Amino acid sequence: MRIIDLLSQARTSLNSQDPAQEAEYLIEAICGISRSHQLIHPDEELSEKQCQQFDSAIKRRIAGEPLAYITGSRGFWDMDLQVTPDVLIPRPDTECLVEQALQRIPADARWQIVDLGTGSGAIALVLARERPLCDITATDLSMAALVIAKENARLQDVKNISFAAGSWFQPIKNRLFEMIICNPPYIPVDDPHLKQSDLPAEPDHALISGGDGLDAIRKIISDSVLHLKPGAFLLLEHGYDQAIKVTELLCNEGFKEIFTEKDYGGNDRVTGGRNSDER
Image 1: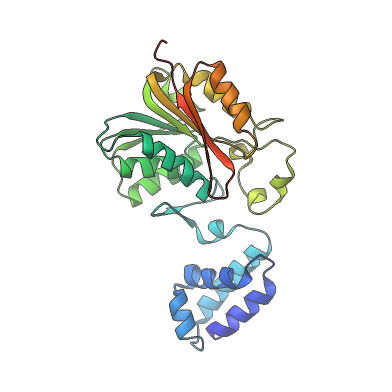
Image 2: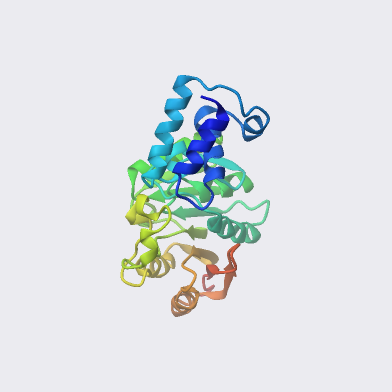
């Protein structure tokens, strides 16, 4: 079958916001044919194996499986990261969290930094690459997630990173850091968004956090003061409507220089502050 015929069938079958773009992306990712090649050679015949692989991918997409899980990868920052259903799919909003961290870490810093709930390792890997003199620790409760994160570190040839298994601060009990960074679960358990887009296919433990979505954030903020050096930073990603509450939680624990920054869509997405110098 020709490329143009596969694309036409896929556009008709896919129920998404941009079926044409998804079809082109899947041919590129599954069959190894670039979008430019698709455009220049639409009448090129594909092998039977390529057609079968593409048909399988389309069926998975129609069933609601996220593109990232079908292709096994997702772009983040300047990296192509491996992802599986064991990890949250990296999103552009989280790049805003990374940007805020990098603005606060001097280029020649030799900081100890921990990424809590690392998932695919996206945050930790960017920080490790952009600040190569820093020592990055990445933790996660899920052993399956850590397997993916370690493989991404290997593929990106990142050396200044270590991994630890456990819930939040449990695997780093006696350590102090210049920065703690986290994209925690922050969606309320009954939020209707959980039934939309890719969320139904992603791991619940990486998305849902109690009735108001703040259970994990409360614990992280409360426990962080035991693991931050004086004046050190805590940076958190959160829901678009949670900035005021997160700010209150930070204030209650004595944090200073508290800030909130917006994501690329103009929503409040990152809030952080500095640990008191007097602890």
